[in-house]
Image: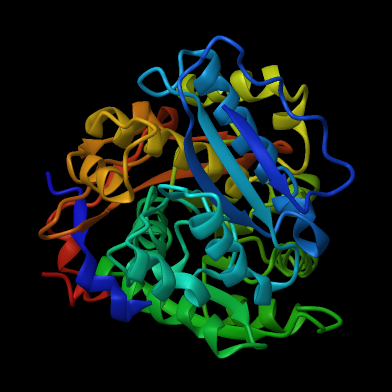
Length: 413
C-alpha cells in the first residue's frame, strides 16, 4: 500500500538541556547523566514557549529536556550524550533568525530538532544555505512542504483534512459543513481543502465564515441546519469552535461534530455540547496512555517532570517535540553519529529511513535523496465523557491509491 506522498505536491498547496529565555515557572532541569564521558552531540531547537502561547507551548522545552535526559540515561547516542540547546523567542518572531544563527554559528548544532514556532519561514533560507537539517516540529507548518532541509515527522494538513472527509463519510455524514475564521485569508485554506476532499469522497459540502468577535453563532447554526448539513467541521480557534457547538445545541441542532487535533483543547472536554466530537491528527494520540507507545512516552516524561503529561500544557505540539527527538535518534542510529559528525551525516541517516514509524509514534516515514515523500496516514480520536480517547487502538489509517487520486493531491508526482 502506498503510504507516502511526494514533496513537490504540497509545496504549492500549502544529555543535558541548555535553555535560553525560559519562563520563571519552569521546573529545574533533570540532573545530567554522569556515566557518559564522550563529547556531546549537540542539537538545537526554537520555541515560542513563553508569553501568550504558554497555555499550549509552555512545556515544549521541558519535553525536549526529558527526551535528552532519557537518551543519556539509556547510554546516549552511540555512547555520546546528547545536548539540546533551546532558544525560547517568546512572542518575538523577529528574534527567530538570530536564535537559529546562534545555534549554528556559536553552539555548533548538527540539526534543529522539533522547532515549535510559526517562524520557520524566516530562517528557512539560512538553514538551507548552511545545510542544517530540521527534524519534526508542527506537521501543519507549511515550510516543511517547501524545503528539502525540513523533515516532517507527521502527516500534513491535506492528509488530515482528506482523512476527516473520509471519516465523515464512514460515519454516515451525507453533507459536511465547515465553519472557518473570517479574520485572515489564510483561514480559507481550510475551506478549499475540505471542499475538495468532500467532493472527492462523494458527500455534499457547505462552508460559512465566522468572526471570533461575534456575540453568538445562532445564525451560522441555523444556516447549516436549514441546508441539511449533518456533519459540522469546526475549523476556527478552539474557543469559537466550542461556542458554535453550544449555540447549535441551543436551537436543537445536533450534527456530528468534527475537528482536527490541533484545535481540540480543554474547552472541548469541558463542554457537553462537544461530547462525541471526532477529530483527525498527524501523529499518535498523545492524550491516550492506553496506547502502549504513548503510555511509555508519557511515563518517561513524567519520570523527569512529575505530572507534566496530566497538565493542561501537555499538548499535541509538546508531544511533537518528543517525536522529533525520537526521529533524531533513529537517524543517528542509521548514520552512526558521534560528536565529530556533521549535519550532512544527520541528513544521510534520515535518508536511510524507510517506512519507520518510530515505534508507533508516527505514520510511516521515508526520506531519500531522490523522490522525497510525505506521510499519507492519519489517526482518529474522539471526545468522550470529558476525555480524549484514541480510536482504532491508536493505530494510523493510511490512504490508498484511489484516495491519492483526489484533487487534493493532484500535483503529486
